Amino acid sequence: MENMVNYDPSFAEEVFRDVDAGDEIKMCMNCGVCAGSCPLREHMDYPPRQIFGLIRAGKREEVLSSKAIMLCTSCYTCVVKCPRNIPVMDVMHGLAHYALKQGYVPRKDTASFGKEFWKQVYRLGRIDEKDLPRRVFFSGGLVEGIKAMLNFMDIGLRLMLHHRMKLLPERKIKGVKSLQKMLDKAEGLGKGGAAA
Amino acid sequence: MADVQTTNQSILVVGGGMSGITAALEAAEAGYDVVLVEKNPYLGGRVTQLYQYFPKLCPPNCGLEINFRRMRQNPKIRFFTMAEVAGISGQEGDYDVTIKLSPRYVNEKCTCCGKCAEVCEVEIDNPFNYGMDKIKAAYLPHEFAFPMRYVLDPCLVGTDEGKKCLEACEYGAVDLDMEEATFDLRVGAIVWAAGWDPYDAAKVDYYGYGEYENVITNVMMERLASPNGPTEGKIVRPSDGKEVKNIAFIQCAGSRDENYLPYCSGICCLASLKQTTYVRELYPDCDVTVFFIDIRALDRLEDFYTKVQEDEKVTFIKSKIANITEDEDTGDLLLEGENTRTGEQILMNFDLVVLATGMVPNGIQVDGAPEVPCDEYGFLVNDPEKTGIYGVGCVRRPTDVASSVQDATAGALKAIQSIARR
Ligand SMILES: Cc1cc2nc3c(=O)[nH]c(=O)nc-3n(C[C@H](O)[C@H](O)[C@H](O)COP(=O)(O)OP(=O)(O)OC[C@H]3O[C@@H](n4cnc5c(N)ncnc54)[C@H](O)[C@@H]3O)c2cc1C
Ligand code: SF4
Ligand code: SF4
Ligand code: SF4
Ligand code: SF4
Image 1 (cartoon, each protein chain N blue to C red):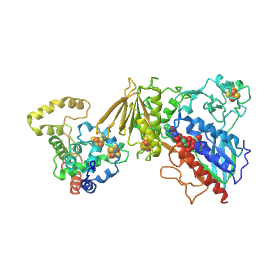
Image 2: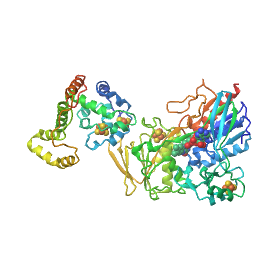
Image 3: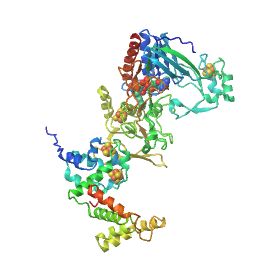
């Protein structure tokens, strides 16, 4: 019995029960398509398939503190390609949300981006392509802010050239109050955004 | 043609592949009158297009030839090529069937002298080689064709080229006035053995089949390896004709995927293992990599897998490939995925990629035919409550020749019982 590994199913059960879309991973056949096609795979500590494997292996700490679950950008590639029709992205978001509720804190830049993004959507009903990065860049102080700005100047200029970024500040959308009510309600239901 | 006398003691077999031929022979050798209809201009089905059979790696023509001899010796079997079922009515023990014959434009006087093909200058895509080469529009479907008789493509009718073929034939075998014909049959039972079609690999768009020339399918690979195929048995890249040095097989290309074919096609693992041996025999320096979810080599077929694994030029990587991109300058292909044993990212280049595509059943598509139960994927199900029409072979499940033959023998017995019950 030397080779026996003791798996602890309690974390998997917790995920199936308490994480949004968590029970979907029961269908995973471990094929690796999600991990092989995620555009952020190089930046993830564990690409989606490995996250699911870790859940089954009972590695609670590794999963909930992983960088990967916070990095998912909702590009949908994995959802479109998964041969078992698993909404991989929803599971990743479910896990991120669950981790935050459990008191896990994402990396500083991920957290500040999420917070600013959320605040802006709440206030304006849309994202201001200049204002958001500016706030994120300067969240770490003046010097870091200037450095980051210089880094991204090239992209910014090109965006402006292609009319993808306006010079004037974005205005609120019509009916932003109704949107805020919807967001409040969603938050009340426990389905809130990254800043939950 | 239409002088076929049948009664409600006769059996109709639809499809002249290994399954249909077996069912027809078994029933005829048990003393029943059988009519076999086959859509192609020749019998044998998909098996005729294979280079070798697993697991023994013998050429499929020996087995087929034995069956054709049995057919020739048995007056109880009548068979029709270029024939399809246009209508079925009635019930177990008493069916009326309408058969549609497409014109071949060549009659039984053909000696296969080849003169018509010599003079014909029109070429068509060669269906036997999945369109990988061209063939004259007056052609013999393949060198072992049974019946051994030429075919004229309908595009020749009413043209000067057609006339040239007619005039070239010294035996009065070309008949451009042939028309589509139908005739009716009365039978007591029907065996449906219409087999399978390869899954359309272009649907899995991230593999680039149809767009990247050097991405081919497993059925094409069988033709490339065949001495009577488009390259006379050389396994070369379609883009530049170079012999392969580094080839990848992608398993489950479309199969076991809810977006495409949700089921396992059963034979494509063995087909790729077999094709690996084609490559390795021909090119001792060629590297082969097989990407798989898991290898399904059941029962004694596992020995074949073990043998291929022993070849040090063959690597097995557990990964379903997630994307292919082509290098436009070289025609090489970049495969991306995750090695699910090590967790490493895969970024590997190959000069030829073979997609192990699956099988789609040819169900009963005849307007107004009595209902025969199917499963959710279109495979026929033999329901003991609904007897009289029986699916056999790959229309029932994706499987190899040995299992198809067993299933067809069982189907022949069921058809005989349908008649005996009356
Ligand atoms: C790449 C590849 C490699 C393979 N290699 C092997 C191998 O090495 N060994 C092995 O055992 N198996 C192999 N197989 C499986 C093998 O091809 C099948 O088991 C076999 O073809 C099944 O025979 P069948 O008669 O059921 O179907 P088919 O061979 O498909 O025959 C069906 C026949 O019915 C005809 N037909 C279709 N529709 C109609 C209609 N409406 N009316 C009249 N006729 C119709 C068709 O033209 C065809 O002639 C391989 C499969 C693939 C994909
Ligand atoms: S693509 Fe789907 S089935 Fe495959 S490993 Fe990812 S989640 Fe699992
Ligand atoms: S949706 Fe998220 S996990 Fe899925 S491929 Fe995109 S970034 Fe990766
Ligand atoms: S059709 Fe006539 S010319 Fe053509 S191969 Fe047959 S016998 Fe020869
Ligand atoms: S036989 Fe092998 S390649 Fe074919 S679908 Fe099944 S597992 Fe995939």
